[in-house]
Length: 193
Image (cartoon, rainbow, N blue to C red; front, top):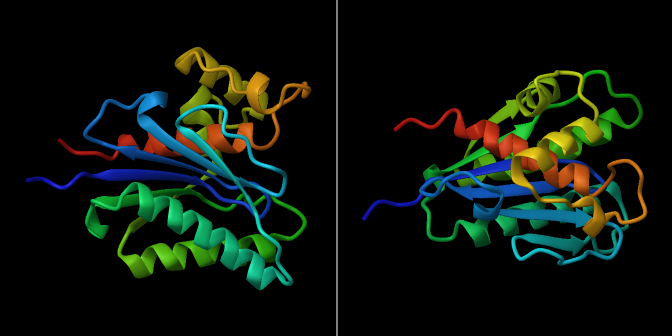
């Protein structure tokens, strides 16, 4: 019996990380993916394959980073529990080197999830944000709204009316869910038959 091969696309952040987990024995479609997001706001379960959770209380950045990474690992381990660790490949959005603000906090946060994935035995591939944008839209400098338009055209799934009904532009969690979807889909290009 062959074990499943799983791909995980991670759009990691300190406020609303998104994960897409895909069993590669299936065709890559939105409905064949398990999507997760974590938010500081109450989470919504509006689609059967999109699961939100609310970030718990924390007293320090170290505790916050640990809570976020534990949530991510729990999502991955629960979804892939029948796979051996070498059969899980992680694709994570790499650092945006043009970022300003709390760049060291962002690096500490992402470093922790990478470390936990490494300790379990997962392979980890960091993908530059411009590569994912170009993969999704054909433009390496695409906006969140352009990526959303490409997502809707490809999947015929409208997340904005469900998760951000009053918003005029893409924000969290929609942008995070979609970014993780395209990071995961990008990972499928590394599969060998």
